[in-house]
Image (tube, rainbow, N blue to C red):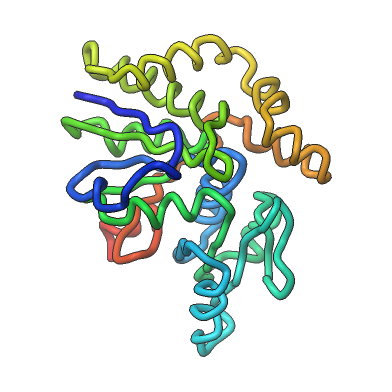
Length: 244
């Protein structure tokens, strides 16, 4: 197995993902929210790259089974049903619903990588399930969403965690330099993921804006057994896709 890591979606061309197996990471908070919503019974997540498109899709819905969700500058957008805190996506609210989701980084990265042959989203909360889903691929690329373009530590550490787990299954996977750097960064922080998140730039911003509890939630490893996979433009748990 060969593993690549891309530190930011900002410098990637969407056509470069064609034919690839991709894992998209946005620990704080989009891919954590995606895993949470699907685990709590959401029917599907529709990731979008702009607020206007999110509102258009939601406006075309003819029933009450679609929720318009997301954030701008960490906070819920006016007129949306939910923001980007995993605590908002409880079973009572999302079960059976389609969720149109826009976020500043994570959903944009999913949209950019949409031409991948296989695209999964991962965070610490569902890491092992995604590792299990991709373990038989010959080549994988992990796309870190970054923070409005630049590198962010939390997504890279999560990428390193994925590499660490795959290394236990595959004998000495081939790593690019970025993959090796991600693994080393994970090994530096693996014993205190929460502290790493709190000390990250985006973590500090979330704390300033009153989302400190979200960081604690996002630091939990393997909280959910769900592997969100993009199929026909929507994210569903891989088991849902098999049964459709």
